[in-house]
Image (cartoon, rainbow, N blue to C red; front, side, top):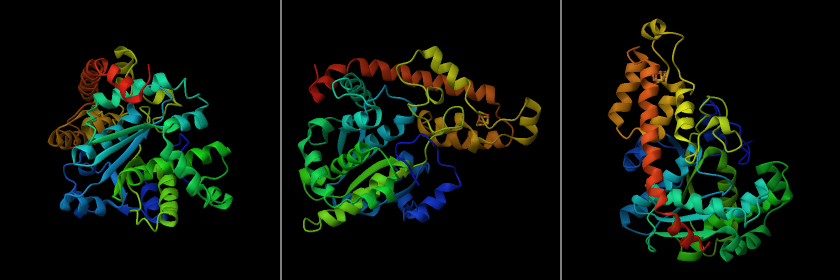
Length: 363
Ligand code: SF4
């Protein structure tokens, strides 16, 4: 069972099983070619989807479509949250209107953080996503806080009538009741683009662990919004980054597995240089046997976020398996790129804090 609130990772060999078990569509070559200007699809970080064909049709016909995402304000932005944030920016650049929610109801239900206490993180997280390039022109974005948005609460109560104990047990297992409510609020988040702005295909970029919310939303949309002819909300699924130490999923619950964008640069550098690699025990073995970039966190974080050049990535992969690239050199190169990214990000973010406050209406 996939658990959206757990910090356990999904093993590489499980992805194929999950695709079959939950009826996720694979990103085949046709879809990949259609979405080549999306870095995460091109690089096969996004491995599965639901409903991307509807998005492609809308792009071709120049019809409206939506990309929906959000963040739970329970701490500073970190390497694990970066993937979803950049995915929404990427889809917005491709022409989708972005719908972005601050999931403060979920931060209460999951982490016990009162709404007022979540406001500081909400502003900080909002400034991060703005610095990452989210376009906040009114025609290109709609942003809300769950606790203040009547639409999501309204949808929650309407569709809640269709939900039974058996259904939630089958999808989520036994959880505190508040988490089931938070899941219904997320249904509200995901159908909000169609309730607010009219019927349109919607894509929700998520890690595979969030698929239970997508399945629940599709099921309830199918049953409640038939007359309105709503599109079943779609999704893309990316492979979850393991922790820098190569074990657990990067998660706010495990501070050693990631770095935040707010922590000291020395600490970030130390964590990157200490990351688990796919390298051999020593230089001779590396030259003789080659490394395993597919099992290397340095290679993965470059591929996900810090190397823009596809050719360089491919060459480094090749050089690693041939034993021509050494881990020390590669780690230094990676740490430099990460620090450059973080420094530039902080500069941009500093100037956007007031804008973030205005958008969220928080003093
Ligand atoms: S050379 Fe680079 S990609 Fe290969 S295992 Fe070492 S750090 Fe990873």
